[in-house]
Length: 89
Image (cartoon, rainbow, N blue to C red; front, side, top):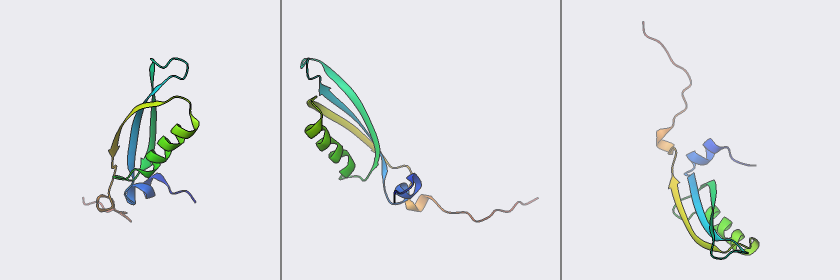
């Protein structure tokens, strides 16, 4: 069963964005870019490295470089479930 985005963020996942520069198969002097985003765990980034490995094995465009950033959206101590609220007059 797939976790929701909120569950993933509460378990420490953050949004990882990677910009991949790769060479066109027919025109090796041309660099192109591809943007990839997914929720991943820092500092190991298993999903990012799994995607890079997939790219190397399955896609003809050779990777030139990868630039990425990681941002935690929320942490377990920053979120709380509110069951109710009250108003003072």
